[in-house]
Amino acid sequence: MATFFAQNCFFLTGPTACGKTALALQFARDEGAEILSMDSVAIYRDMNIGSAKPTTEEQAQAPHHLIDLVDPDEEFSVVEYIHQAEIVARDCLARGKKPLFVGGTPLYLKGLIFGLFEGPEGDEAFRASMYAQAKEAAEAGDLTFLHRKLEAVDPVTARRLHPNDAKRIIRALEVYELTGRPIHEFQTQFQHEVPPEFKERIRIIDLPRPDLHARIEARVDQMFQAGFLEEVQNLRAKYHTLSKTAAMAVGYREVLAWLDAQERGEETQTFDQLVTEIKTHTRQMAKRQVTWFRSLMNQEFMF
Image 1 (spheres, rainbow, N blue to C red):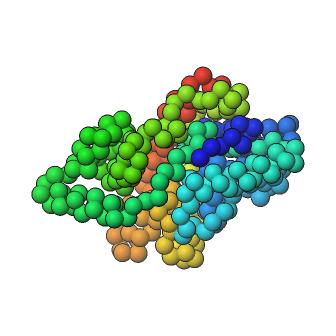
Image 2 (cartoon, rainbow, N blue to C red):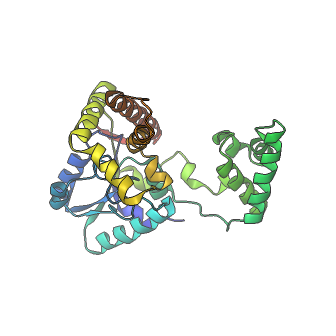
Image 3 (cartoon, one colour):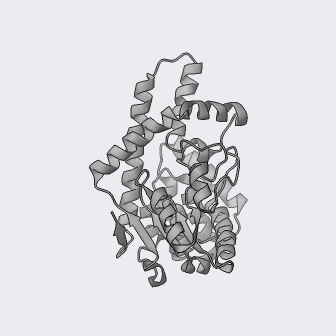
């Protein structure tokens, strides 16, 4: 999937809690830009506090897009995101506005910069056969059957995937079966060198680790002060079951598990321990984000 439209856009990214929103609003005011969210949690309605979604007041300062696209009990793929992003970005450009993508979801940024490989249609019979063979092998004590099978035809992709990631391993095997070529040859989103046309348009916020950790601590405390616990309770009451993506979002997944334990009468954590756990997991997520952003070579960093 080509994303040539993105060559005319701007990108502001960085780890969670690093201050992207304030800088984005300043850019929008100075450059006549419109803000396009690049956040995989902000796309969900009613997930406001935990996603640090721009407030009503902030959204009033500049047009915001790609927020509140679906309900949290719906799945929303990166392919769907890129499709929606293209519609909005092209509309901004047609109106003479600069599209500014703002957010910290690496998969969305990868898709916008490098494009996505959609691949051939899935072969359900092949997938069923692979799952059946893997199950039979596991029952015999062989837990790496699929991964070894992939290593034999596509060692590059095998090195990138965890041996337990059955879904992606089977997809890689499927692509090889249907095309005769390894999937990594198609997946330009995994290349490391940023195309030249993007290099002057990407800005990455990189804070010293102690400063970032302090901001994360304050962010989580502010979330609960703003009613984050009540927000998650309302999500459970309204939607009952959240989509896998929504339910696994950092902050939400910990509170959902805590509430479930409370209902079962299990005293697994105190409230203070819950808050501490969310801070820890948020710091870990930020570290993963920073690692990937720093792999974008020769980019200009804003401090």
